[in-house]
Length: 398
Image (cartoon, rainbow, N blue to C red; front, side, top):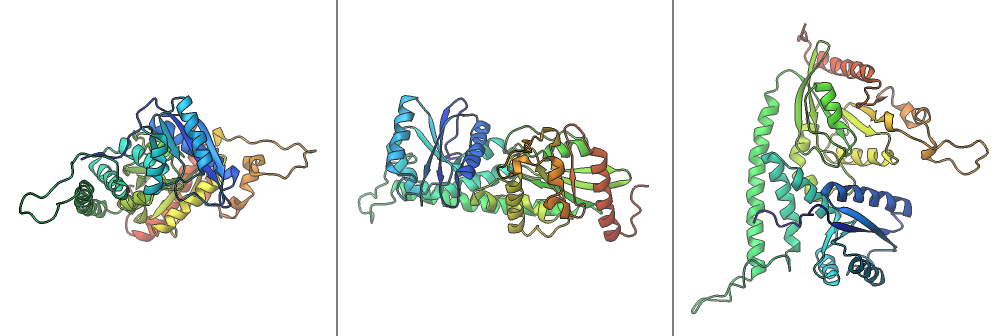
């Protein structure tokens, strides 16, 4: 009973379904669906078409209206689509009702998809345990009709009662498994806490940021090591710690799991121990992909999660990465339409809220090494200041 969550086989065709509400306008809905499409590609499927519906609130039975769901069902049948993916988390009853409409085709929600990607990327025992725990917590309320590996158990002659039903047995097995995984995580957490204590007199710096902003690339460039990095979401799941030396100053640098909007609560809970690395750091490097059209919202998402794990008060350097990929739409002088963020050049951005950060931000390209030496100097000065205050009698390396 190792993996019950639906895995997305590569090469499958998928349609994406989102909604437009008062809280989520058309522009934001498109942005979320863009991100969902990237998640689908990361999982190995191909997004073929998107469906959106304007609604005051979601339909408690089928998430979207019956007319729209019939339209999607017709398209799915005509074009031989394999998976229908919803951009929000579906309740167990919504999932069952939607599955009845689509028959044998798979219906996934955003949470299920993210869990699937995490399951593929998990390498170490720690990450595998965290992902498995999150999967079972997601699965527990959704057991009905998911699988039938046990026929209904009946009590024998002279036995009292009809025995457990299949669903009750499944729930009991899953609850026992969840308890076991939680105990296993506690043991691993103790081991990791011991490892962190044994790291000696060195300042700890953590790379934090949205997924796919270039944290692992910066880690590789600073530590001259080979941490797995690629242009996909959640390429890093396990926290990697490396010793970095800039000039005469050694310190520890941690590469952490990337954050994402609408991150499933099960994953935040399961990955609390991974985020301990961030909580226990002395200093954060908040990496931002400045070439992304909506990087400001990504920054807000990361700050929200840092707040949740009580790490928002730490000294932070904002690192605006990927300036080599940055583009903007230049506004003509006779253009009278309102100016938007897409019309801002890098210099314009530097004069916005970023100018109030008291030099706690820098624009770089880790890939092309633009402003790289300046970045290393700033990191050196910041770490040196904390180091001198924390270990006044430590004479650095030489």
